[in-house]
Image (cartoon, rainbow, N blue to C red):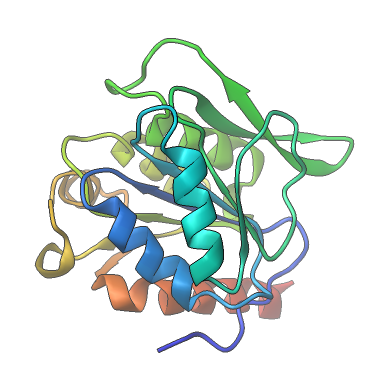
Length: 203
């Protein structure tokens, strides 16, 4: 069910992290998001060379403009930014604008890009104006970062066990209190949109 609107106040952001099984899950979530949504940052565990094609494929399937993230690229509404393979993607605010930062610092939670690194930057920089989702994946990457987002006042959702190919990352996030609720993958876009619309009405 495509979401009609996810209009949100200036400065809002959607952050999505996934690993094993995430290509399909991300496609499902992004495919349901409307073009009026705030910028989306995505960390999907993938080797270098694959993330550009993944972004191009998503771009064909979604109402959003999907690109592979580049360093210092401004984050624009209606656009989604896929972390580049072998680079961490962080969000920073400079001159009042949200931007992508790419870096090759050490692996985090065994990964680069790491979902934790991205979520942690979102927690610090965007705080309660962010919404986050953790999707299917093996291991525990993302749980710590998503907990920081939730503690900073962000809305957070985890993919439910029944709909996740690998209920690893969402399970750890749920057990560690990082997610406000769990939902089947088909409903995650609408949960994120509803949280953004609530921000809008509070603004």
